[in-house]
Length: 162
Image (cartoon, rainbow, N blue to C red; front, top):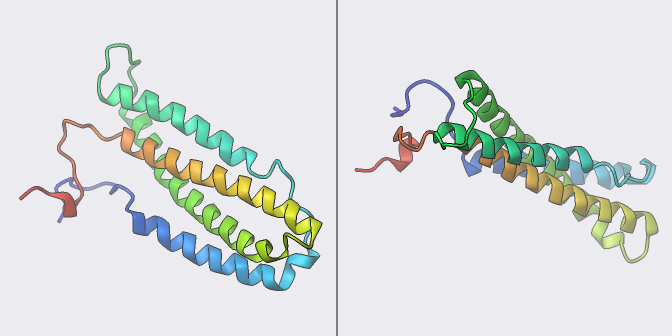
């Protein structure tokens, strides 16, 4: 049983690995049969993920300051902090899925990059998507952890001191 009581547990790496692997395999398998019929990827595809990641990094800084009662921090309602924590958890999970999708895309395209211009173009977009989604995972985890009060002693059950 957890010492934290009811509520959300911090995201564990296995919760991120499962969607990453499942989506990577699925995307790779689907693209093996249908890539030739798809239009070129646009360079703006990763932009929303990158913008969300930047916004979450900014929010994480503000939430952390409020939770730690920093002198210059603006107070935040507990429900707002809880929603930010939930957003961070959701973003890290979605980001890990997009990382998997990007890896599946790149695994499908990299063998064709030297010979096919469209594959080279889409691989560049895939790398940008991979970077933006990895940034979203990191920002989501930071936002989730920013809402944890360092004085509460809240730990995962497997991190308890004995």
